[in-house]
Length: 171
Image 1 (spheres, one colour):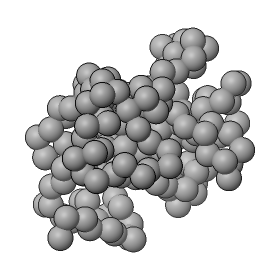
Image 2 (cartoon, helix red, strand yellow):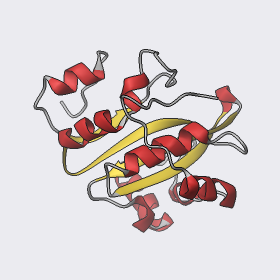
Image 3 (cartoon, one colour):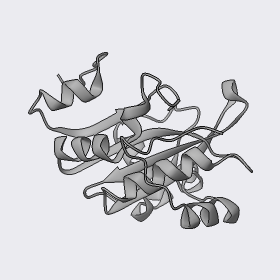
């Protein structure tokens, strides 16, 4: 199969598996201290994920709110991923059900999403018979990775790397 979906303890699964992946998509619950997902936002977990990616593999993870004055978890996740991966690309999108912009981070062992033009994205979508998407196209792709100055500054100034012994604590 081209896609495998797992509903299990991610850390335990990855520690006990030797499988490797081209793409890993992670949508976790909030990283509340002591919560069920708190250890899945750490440098150690990201190292484990990196080991499970194939060459040129990519990982994307939801990274909490990314709105004016509410970026502290988003920036800490980005900083932590950047301590493990050479290429990390923060992006955001409006999530209507959350009534705010939500942050995401893509970590890559190869592809750089910023190198793709709007036209290249549109051609790829057409070739894959994805012309009827409601949200995503080449122009949207460019906009996703265009962060406002205040968020770029917050990313640059973020000092925290999340570890098992230094968990993220939401405000």
